[in-house]
Length: 198
Length: 297
Image (cartoon, rainbow over all chains, first blue to last red; front, side, top):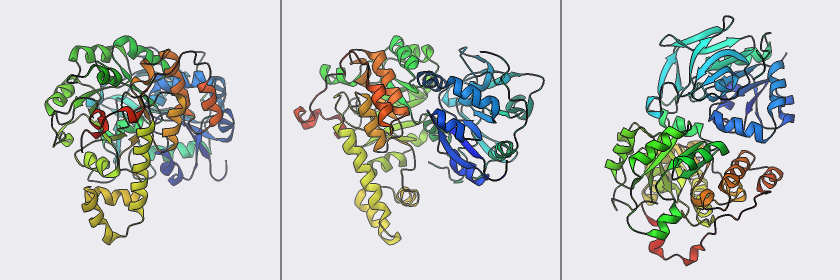
């Protein structure tokens, strides 16, 4: 795709607007996404941080599941924290529904509660882990882009990407992760097809 | 609020950012917490009595029993908040030791100190505090609050005070935006607000931390109203579990917040509520000393 990719941020709940300056600095156009029409307009999607249980209830309440499944099969998607949980094939603590787009196993709140939230650098860029999940296992074709204490925290397979940390809370634009994702939005890679029904 | 380095939102306010565009519900036991979570609450506030019961029963309202908060923490996967009395830093220390995700230094409980609030910078756990105007919000942020909410008038089911406080904060911010650099220090003196924080407000055009609404939300329309006035998330205290159909009201308010600026969606959320909302109190029936918003300074 030439020019500015439209990067949609799922705008049902969570840290939505913080992505705007990152997306714009990475050369994309920011679009909050809430309706089926919005999903058609966007070239790529960020599932933001927030509460995964709340997002699941709202996706269900507004009948968005099929629209999202279709959109994610065709276009790049990046799940952050709660969003990573929505993309994972397997979710624990507790088990919950997900889009199963990335063959990873994720345990919710695995570092503990808010008192265990921390900030750390990835390649010189500070990021925040807030009541973060842990990626316990990844499928063989999943590329690990960053680790914390030997566990993957930033992964990618084809055009599907997940991070357990929040780069959007850092006010230095764009974050390396938003830059990577904007590149993906410009030239999507194959392999983001759902791993199977969930 | 940004850290000294100025390039990252601190970890306490970071959690508040994650709670945006959501509903935080008061719950008094694990069953209610499950109902709240199932309805899509982003967090629950664990307490022994909802504000309308505190109002009715009177007496000294204190921090809840630790066992009750613990039971609620075990029953849900979403963040759990709990209240301490204004100025009661020992209650706050206990809540931090318990591992709650957020502490509300709340005017709903009986104040422990009529002059001083808790030094929230001394804690690792984030705090939310009530405010009725910009200056009060900035004093609390100066003490370390990671999140501000309107005080409203808790336990009344009456939105009028939350609206008053939200509008007041908005008006105060707009006024600060009209001032030039030389006028800012005098404004800080007149308001009783920290100068450095006032400078941030003038630069950013908003509070340095997220601004939620609390106190009197009882219907999907109430939630939409305060969100349109600038609230970034809604606390619902008595409004859910004092309605005639708590699960239905909880779900309806969650849906209304997600599409607060789309009247058709708020209409949809408002339909099919078979039970009545909480009955509510006319604010003019309350004596000055019965108004919880007057607690704190």
